[in-house]
Length: 278
Image 1: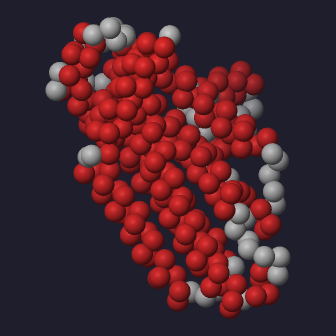
Image 2 (image 1 turned 120 degrees about the horizontal axis):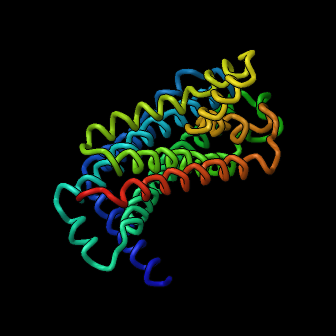
């Protein structure tokens, strides 16, 4: 068992280091730094505490946008680079099982997404803290109870977004496990992401179906794709005084929901990759 864990984390560490050295990751880091510089732009608004929610929505949207691109492109690229360079044959020729190879690659990307998500959350936290301090001096009546932003909630939400991106990465691993090209994996993964992001619309339509048999069939099919809207609790976690506090179990429920889908898609990837010719 110790040998299995060692092999998986060795592959994961090498994958993470390879990903960090890529120009693609460095470009996204530069974009995140540019996000801090853009905070000076918000000085001209000065419309009170509502500005903080605007900045938060802007930053959280950036985390999901850049994180989604990173999750899909990096996962597919790191997977197919091993296949195209034939290094996967060298790795699998050693006492490394195919499921260990997939698990290691996924863990490496998961580490990369964690670093990226926490970096972006840190930048957003700096922007909010700096701007909130300035607004407290100008609009003191809006801050009679102190700071409005929960910075602990910000990083708690960042963890949930990391799991959300982990689900997207697991979906990309699954698609890459049977895909023949990098481009196909990227395009299909983004298409699936769009389905997951808009699934709540289909759920509303599903609940209005009159035929119970058809409603159950459509409801069962909807479970094949995770509902990414479940992870959109940023407003509540960052502004509990204004939006109302959620129950203590809600973040854990969302986290468990994400973990279940991660395990399910990685298990499917292992199943399809087992008989693939390399």
